[in-house]
Length: 196
Image 1: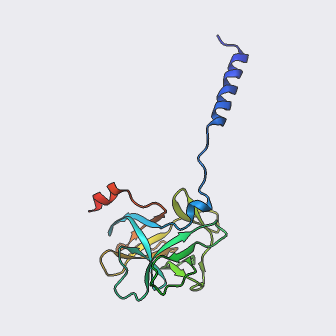
Image 2: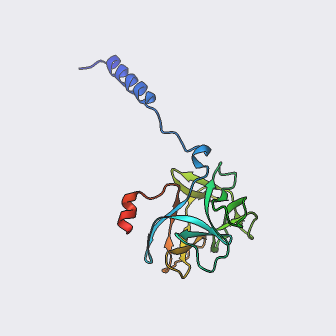
């Protein structure tokens, strides 16, 4: 039978050993500078498996191409420096007339179901460009009650392979669209092979 002293010593060694195991570091602002965001989701209307976000006439579009009626289109990167700062949006296409200093905006009004805006000014009432956080690699928004929310929704644009990104504050049921989450990591090549 072991003595109380031996058991105490073993417990202390276990605690010291556990304390010396390095913890994974949280994402820093350096990790979230000039990143691309990718949409992932499955619904009645299909699956979106890591398709990149792009800019089209002031709105966020999910797809390999923007709607044909869009006049200003660009691939974009995003930069994040904390929930009190906006998510910066920068066009990566050099021959575009998209604004160079933009932020990502969502309409957080209680019954809104509006497009996610990429703009250099507030697009309207109840739109915000702050309150976003990364939970691991996933982009979330912190509600007024402190809950993490991901109410992104892909709505069809009427053209194959192109979806309008919306924020669904109203939790509207939409059988033609797909609830999606945004991630800072692109799909693996295995995922792309399965989609082909």
